[in-house]
Amino acid sequence: MFPPLYAILDPSLITEPILTVAEKLADGGVKLVQLRDKRATPAALCATARELSGFLSPRGVRFILNDRPDIAAIVGVSGVHVGQDDIPVEDARKICPAPRWVGVSTHNLKQLREADLTSADYIAVGPVFPTGTKANPDPVVGIEFLRQARQVTKKPLVAIGGITIETAADVFRAGADSVAVIRDLLLAGDIASRAREYQLIADQIFLSRG
Image 1: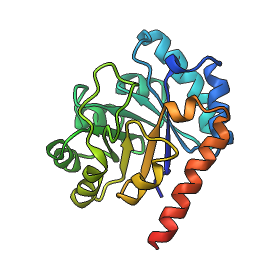
Image 2: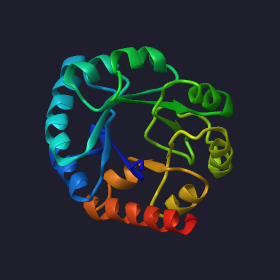
Image 3: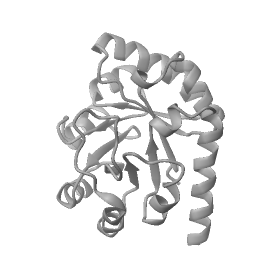
Image 4: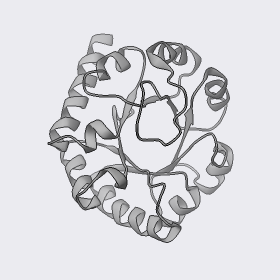
């Protein structure tokens, strides 16, 4: 089963050491974590990725690196996530072959259909709601888009963009296999507890599906 909570670590949003936050995520049962650091130099990104991978992997957490399949391969992390302006999925796959994961972001049905034909292990869709974590976010796609997306692909769907504990249930009901969360997780007073809340919501929704 694809992990229902996809935690995204953005160093610009945290004030604690990144390993401290990673430990809280692991304590909260998170099994999928991505490092998204748009500001770091390649050397700094490599060092942070190596540190996080060394910490998370022994704890059974799959660790994904954003944007950089080359660094993902060098460090030996669990996979890479690419966007529409990054290296194409199949090129990323050459650098990060299975069992490493390659995920891809999509923002409309055309991109989604194209992604479905690739070797991507999962497809991210969004932003589902307005988000403040990107300088130039793509247009909001909304809940209805998730329902449409679910009809297009059988690959795991990861919903991203402005998702909170209050909206997560609706997102899962619309067909998402997982929710990627940044602010509502990293800025929570108790990160581990918030992570468990998300996973409890997912369990309840998936159980009701049968």
